[in-house]
Length: 208
Image (cartoon, rainbow, N blue to C red):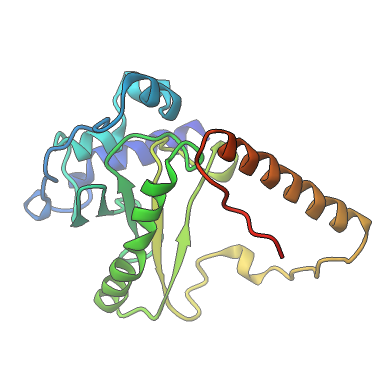
């Protein structure tokens, strides 16, 4: 697992080893922690990445090359240098947040708002008609770079990209376990929502 993590991290630092350096473009310089005070930075960052140099932060600051597809004040999109399919790309926030949970809702919204625009261009450029939108959030989910990012993975019919697509899915049983699970999730949502209200952020839940 550690070898896989190192291989992926190195591929992001040295994309020139896979593709010609003349094709690379440095992204415009930006402070990875722009707009964050020290307290916000620490609460949303991965200490190991900060000390050792986050791969994506280096790209954002212009210290490492990348194939840039799109950039605005909040985020940028680059080609993944270890792609699962041709055109596999990453949308990355310019501020450093270690996970989706640590990323402010307005930053997540800004990133997601660009998905239709960017994915449409990627699908046309790769002659694809479908794509997967993916976030690996946490080590158990396969996250290896702890700087929030969204994967756009172009797909074509019968490309057999995911082994799980051939697995037979079991229907959800309408039993007590499913009911307890739904109740527990709603309870957690209510706790989270009440916490936001107490902080003056407003409610995000609606009554049925």
